[in-house]
Every structure is written in structure tokens, then in C-alpha cells.
Length: 493
Image 1: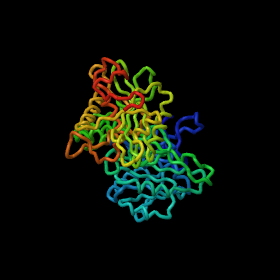
Image 2 (image 1 turned 135 degrees about the vertical axis):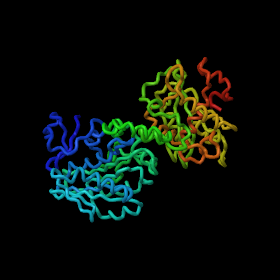
Image 3 (image 1 turned 180 degrees about the horizontal axis):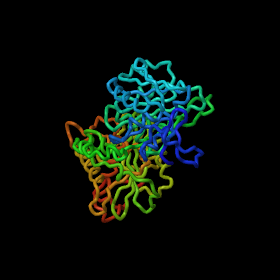
Image 4 (image 1 turned 120 degrees about the vertical axis):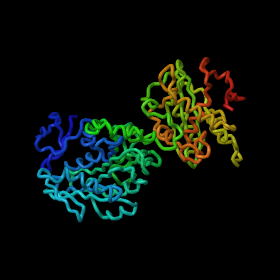
């Protein structure tokens, strides 16, 4: 698709593509022509909720102001564009006047109401949401377009979710949409990342998920004709400094970003969402550690590891070893809550139906404890279903050793030029959680043991620790080397 251009309120957003049956743009009527690339993609996108952002200087604020212009010719358009504080709002209002306050658009600004009004009767309200309670000011209001500029400045998702309930229209030709722009970092970094970054690769539309469970949200109203269907789509469109030709020519701005501390430099210059201050694994790089899935050959050694929890989460990972390089490929994950051990065993075996031989599994050794039960332990219950395990090493020093092995696997091998571990992009929870795990402030050699989302991390270190560093000989189930040697090959313990 060619670059979309924002025209006057007498005509909606159009493209220059005659294949889509759209008239070419009359250049003298164009008030804003976006940069080729992400700005154009953002203005042409149609998903219900879209986040536009990444590196500093990507032209995000102007894109947010330009997006609703296409609807200014519709008399029933009612829009709302918010910033976190009134001080930040002043800057946005000043920028809006360069687009709206001219003879072409003919917008009229009311300082008292903080509202733009256009000849058709369309209105765009510019306001702020400093505290969660401020959303109540919009109770009873209805908007067809809502924009949040610098979304990560809101510490929680509450304002975003509440304002979504304010979207409604009686005009069938007027779509409902929420738009946001932001850089990585800020008090709301993690919830924004969970909502827009983690569920799918950048630029790819996806069904909206619950940020707490990661599950796709569906219509659960049995009386609805859409019962059981996903609710709506989201999309993240990344932007970089290089996408802004004006700032790209400004060498001093780039030098300023380069002078910042490492985590801020990665966030603002490169738009890296996986960087968090105090994170344990600074080697993580989504570009090299995450790969597209492929068919794992059956002759590759495969194994799995699990950290079980009923009240919280159970995390299971599947590993394959590339024979020539000893590279670990994490090719599948299972991340579920409130699932009984025997049911988890069935889910695991079902997932492995077409895997060929999965040589062994590593399981948290505490599951062999009776835990007050009179019957078999949880591990015994799973093994009894045919899902065999060995107890993972939880001896003194094993946590630090496991963390060090993850560091080693994340490093780039000097001979192959590739990392010693890569992860399929379908393992969305592991990809989201691993770079976010914080260091223990009292013991920098370990991660924070109070961090809630460490189940897949524990499964990862269990699995990696089970693989000997030497790859001169492939694993043989008859010879376990210096690893755990089960007394029974049938039951696995």
C-alpha cells in the first residue's frame, strides 16, 4: 500500500492506490503526509486497538493528531485525545494547532472546553487523566475515537480499559477505534507490553488477550449471536528514530540518546521493549534469540522440563538439540493454571503425540514429597499416567548454577556466530517473562525469588541443567553420565 495522506475534512483518509478504487490525493488539499513506513501503516490500519511506538523521535504525536482527521467530515464523530497531566496536554494542544487551525481544516478551538469543533459538527476533545478516578469525568459520555498519547505514563491498565467502555456510535459508517502512542519504559511499561507486545510479533494483528492470563478474550454471552467468538483485534506498529527524516538528520539528537544509560538507550534509541532496569538477563535480544517455528527432525534429541503449581501456574517447556552445534531449541511451551497434576500429564502427552521420542523430563523434585496426602505423590500420579520424569536438581547452589547456564546459552557462540539457545516465537509467555525477571537485590548472583512469574524460568533452568555441556556423545538413555540415574527406566525415578 502506498503512503496514505490526510486530506481536508470534506473527504476521508485515502490512499494513492487506484487498485482499491480510491481517487488520487489532490496534493494542494493535503495537510499532513506521513513518512513512508510505520506512520503510513499506522494511519492505514483498521484494528480496533492499535499501539504505535518504540524508539523516541518516531513521529508518534503527530501521527496521533493526524489519525482522527479522516473523520472530521462526519457530523456524528466525537473524539477524545488524552495525556496523563495538564502540563503534557499543553504541548499536545500546541502541536494540534499546526494541523487543525488553518483554512483547509477550519477547526475552531475552545480554550474553555478544550475542544476542537469542525464545520461538519464533528468534535475532538483534548483532556487529561492524571488519576484513575479521573475516568469518572467521562461517565455517560460516548466517543467513536479515543487516543492515549504516551500510554506507558499510566501505571495501570484501568484508565485504558474503562475508557474502552466509552466507545459507541449510532452511525454504521463510523468505525470505533482506540489508538495509543508511547516509548518503552515508564510506570506502565509492563502492562502495555503484556497487552500489545507479547501476544504477537510486531506489526502483526492478533485477537485481544487478557493481560493476566494471556488467553484470547471471547464473547461469553450465551444469548449473543457472537457467542464463543473472539472480541476484537489489537496490533502493535513499531517506530524508530530512522523513520523520522527530520530527526535522522539531527546528529545531536542521536548522540544525546547514545549517551544515556544502557537500558534507557535501548528503550529510546532502539525501541527495545525487553529491557527493564534491574533485569537479570541483559544478553537477551529478541532479534537473535526468537525464531520462526520449523519442523524439528525426529532424530534430534528432545526432552522437557516442568515447574508445577496448581494455585499459581504450571510451566512446561520442550527442548530439542541441534546435533552439529549442540544449540538448544525451545520449541514448545505449556502455561496453565488450576490444572491437576494428572490432567497436566494428559495435556503433556497429548502435545507430544507427533514429537517422536521425548527422551526424558525434568520435574521439580518437591513433587515427590507426599505433601500431607495419603496416596501417591504428585510426581507418582503423573508417572502413573505414562508421563515420566526425573527430579530436577534443587541442591544448594543449583539456582545460581541454573542462572549461569541460561547466561551461557544466551551468549553468541564464537564459532557458529549464533546464540547457543533459540526459542520459537510461539512460546509467547517464555519470551515475555525471561527478559523481565529481576535480579535479587540482596544477591545479584540469583534472580528475585519473590517474582511471581518465574515458573517458565524455573522450567528453563531445570531443562538446561540436565543437558551436559559436552556434546561429544549424544544422550543415551542407558548411560546418564553425571546426571540423575533413575533406579527404574519404566517409572523414571
